[in-house]
Length: 233
Image 1 (tube, helix red, strand yellow):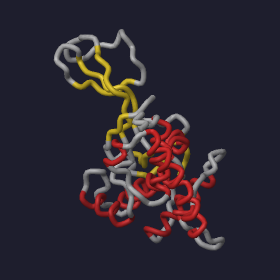
Image 2 (cartoon, one colour; image 1 turned 120 degrees about the horizontal axis):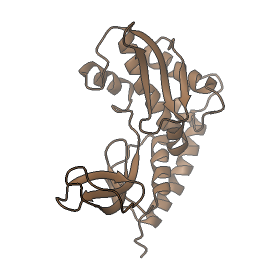
Image 3 (cartoon, one colour; image 1 turned 120 degrees about the vertical axis):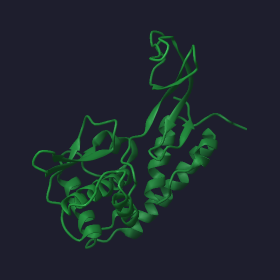
Image 4 (cartoon, helix red, strand yellow; image 1 turned 135 degrees about the horizontal axis):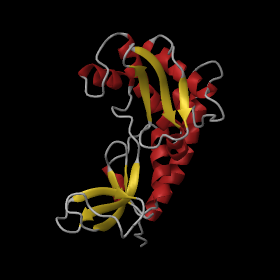
């Protein structure tokens, strides 16, 4: 039996397909072999196509039917964001919704002028879209729209606020618009403190705690919901 671990790319694909079919990634992903992940991907691709076809209607907005988003401009992203705003909040989003080509450490964000309290824009990571697909973007947009609408109503709107968490639950949005992280686990060679992830194994890297060389462990993917999965790079 082939027990090789799936690659990072396979698990990213599997993650995006799970979102397309409306399933949340779980701890079971950590137990998949390369062949099992491959089988899941093939099954989910067929399921995602079927769902998109069933949900599509020329005169209706159906978020589950969206499998790709044009990145050549902000036009389609802005349209999708406004359709989500109308669907879940009953009013449009009156600030720009834009792609960001350089943002990698977050899925997106809502920004406002702290001095004037004027809302500015909602930003979505294009890199995140290219990695994890349209449904990841839709989840992020719903999360950021919750920030925006609560802000406009003068209500608590931070990730930690109860009102915000309730709103995310109401509209089925993720509680955190976080990125997926990957890299080798690293540890301080002196005290064994976990020191984070590194994409490359560099001999010159040293820990902050003891200024000692780092030791490298398994290559991991950390999903936005916190699940950690060992993969082949």
